[in-house]
Length: 282
Image (cartoon, rainbow, N blue to C red; front, side, top):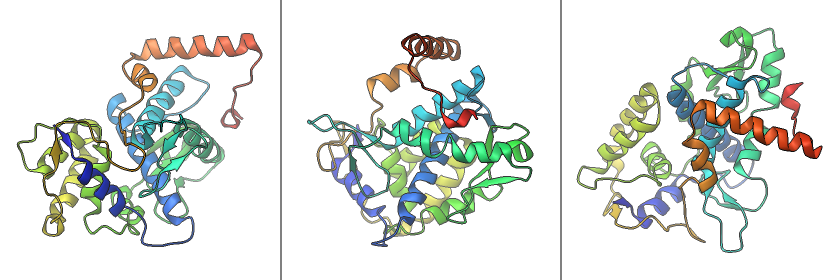
């Protein structure tokens, strides 16, 4: 069984911002998706501190794993015209522009990490909105390109969701995040969502998320007929939370296979004289 078109679309729309202007919702969504992709990568790699140094094999591998998780969170199935479709702000769909991987590389895996690597003080992110969910850099992590959880990450997650129209924001976020999951369809929806969240994210995030969903239970009157037999086709233009085939291929690779693939692709670019180095290496 899968989540129904109606419940996925309702959850996505409810997560939209109550404010009609400004970039606050976009910035908060970006940080939230970076955090969720970091946590999922952290669970997959078995590390609470990720070294994202692009000059090392481990750093490249950690970046690839985190990028794959980010793509899985925000990428939507391409429309029939083949244009990129993804979510940069909860409640809205973007068509065209940068791919999710390009967005993450240019907006997060470059300037903030580089600034943190050069900082002599503990570096937290983001500074705006004032709700840091990460600590970065050598002082905070012991690694120049290190990334880990901020001390108050759980309290600050709530601030990132504070402008959502929903009064069941953690439940609706779980529905959106789990839109590509299969369900048995026999247990109560919150229990099923908690199981899927626990499979994908760290124990401390999953436990916190589950407690928040339980606290929202009294308001969750809209979770009616949550399942259907077919994969969700909700949201305008066709909905898809599944990882695309290319991303899934990388997700299934071992660490050594992925490093070998990266080296091979880089050799092709070098042979063709194509520049692919980013400012993050400075």
